[in-house]
Image (cartoon, rainbow, N blue to C red):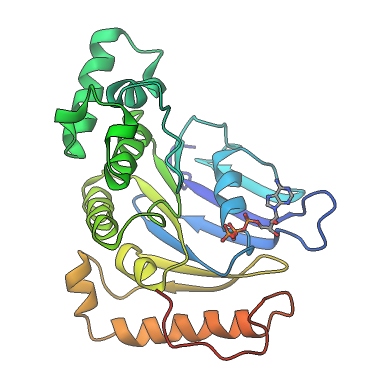
Length: 268
Ligand SMILES: Nc1ncnc2c1ncn2[C@@H]1O[C@H](COP(=O)(O)OP(=O)(O)OP(=O)(O)O)[C@@H](O)[C@H]1O
């Protein structure tokens, strides 16, 4: 059982009650230990639902989801990071991070909180409240909280979408560094940005909407930090390929506002 992959989805389908289309239809995906998979796709293609399935927060109508060989249990082996941080405004930074460690003895909890805050460069802000921090800093607190319980799988749902460009790049570098350091920790990272998918992923999974399906899975030929990746000769080629596939999906989707229209060659 210990050799089972971090997450395996087999022929998973899920339709929410009353929905015209399946949120996910016949989706199969395997996540390897230490792998960073970025999930890319237009609005409504089931990206968030995929993360929630791995987290054990929803169950499929058919097919199976296994996390380390067993049905997922919420909070057990994975942690979710959202776009809107979900920090508790009435608790300090340290209390927010320590929140997930409530079952540990106080000294161990304090030590772990300090370690996590040092990791994200926020030791000096332990006693501050979320409202006293910038958006980028708050997102670092959310990341520290997600990592505090040392999850084997980090599930990130457009975590940097609401950050300014500079904070976003710094956070991407942080994730890239953590994933290269993290002994065997796997990451599933949902994004709308082709660039972000290419800068962070070992593999990019492209999903299509209505019903949500895996359209393409692309092993990336580069590793390492953002700059090395952007300088790789294949980066622009892959960027163009993914963007063209996304554009085609959106333009050919009768439910999309952009159906049948032209779009610029940019997604940022
Ligand atoms: N709890 C729910 N009840 C009903 N329908 C839902 C629920 N959650 C998601 N859906 C529907 O399932 C589909 C997939 O939703 P999901 O949020 O997974 O897509 P997404 O790719 O993450 O979208 P976005 O990029 O806009 O966040 C959508 O059509 C959505 O409206």
